[in-house]
Image: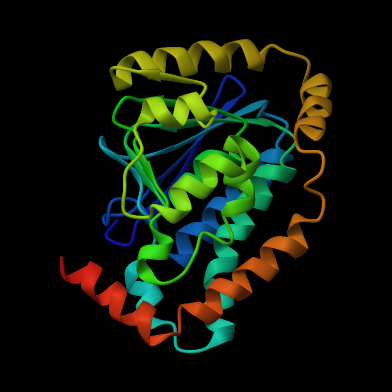
Length: 252
């Protein structure tokens, strides 16, 4: 529990993946690997027709990369491997033939914005502000960038990236296309998620598979692209600038 978890529950052809980490649902390498594996497995599971991706807790959807793991990286290979974890989750979402519904109940930072961008349909509450904070610690949203840009466009992604310390509201994120709809409460959001999931669970699986392929056309090169991006982040994270910046963040 103290190291976090990934849980999967399947009921009425709807599978729910829930992740948790005590540091505001940050994503250490182990959690990333479990997430990617769960998404991939459910993609071929005959008892799963639709997937819901959520995190535990109330006000933090996902804090992105684990600072503890970032500061422990001491060579480029380790750095690339860590950031490849985010690439694996995004690529698992991309390749999964089932629709993935995102549930964002609170703030999303960095890799958390990437996860929200990689699902096919995303619901959120009014508390689900977003921030791409990578530049503030001397790196950039290189791995999650393509997923974020695909969902909200280059202009909005650039705004988030450049103004790395500023939160953008859930309404802003919905206006840009990250969220399909926002709600005042988690209860209202969960009702909407259940309604859509039930409809999709009775829809034609083959039609949904074909639609998903169409939605993700033009991303076939992402296995290579995201690996290259992971290398960029893995190199930058070794800099003195980044190490000092991360230590400052951790001490706040």
